[in-house]
Image (cartoon, rainbow, N blue to C red):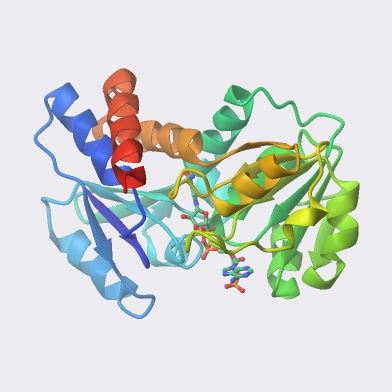
Length: 273
Ligand code: NAP
């Protein structure tokens, strides 16, 4: 099993997927592989020809572009126009989306009910599509902010966002002041210190969900808590999307306890000085 993305160094997927294979007695190995956008078509062809590769996860920045390079799409991937999981049978590559269920379960685990709440999603890439699709049917409004406004417009059009819509980065201060839930679906913060907007725009009425999880105390989670807001990182989403990917690849129930424990160990390891 492969993880295809650029970058992939921050990912903790290998640690818990390999623990899952071991616990289920499946002789498979999960390996991250850094792949540029230019090399992606060729790497997919290599996978098609290699019967030993049973599947892959797809991460930043390929989740949208990969959809048009595959032989078929599962229902969620088709609807979202974004793929985070590939399955490989014969010479056929099928794309799936497990980010959607991962985000929905993680939000529920966090005890946050988005009904009658207004939400702001930062970013309009592959992961944002999964997040927006969950929120458009639950939250009262969903605003999507992207530095490339056309990308946010396309997302809102494709997913039929009716209440809320695309908003330019230039209006962020106003929108942040009016929403209850803020979801970061950009890589901003992977460097351990950057934020999309100034920390003092946050207040105790906000709930913040950062899709980033490494470092575990992400800059946005730290800023939110410093301003009295509740905040969670993307670790639970990572686990839940990974359990669903495991089941697609193997056709077997994922050994959740072993995978959760391995992820917790990996987080402690990544947070160690
Ligand atoms: P993606 O498809 O490449 O989308 C990234 C989005 O962020 C794009 O809209 C991009 O805009 C925007 N962006 C990038 N750099 C930015 C910056 N400096 N300032 C403002 N906006 C910026 O990536 P993705 O697959 O959606 O993933 C997004 C992040 O979520 C990644 O860090 C990924 O690791 C994380 N993620 C976590 C989980 C989880 O399970 N916890 C699941 C999925 C994703 P441009 O197109 O203009 O660059």
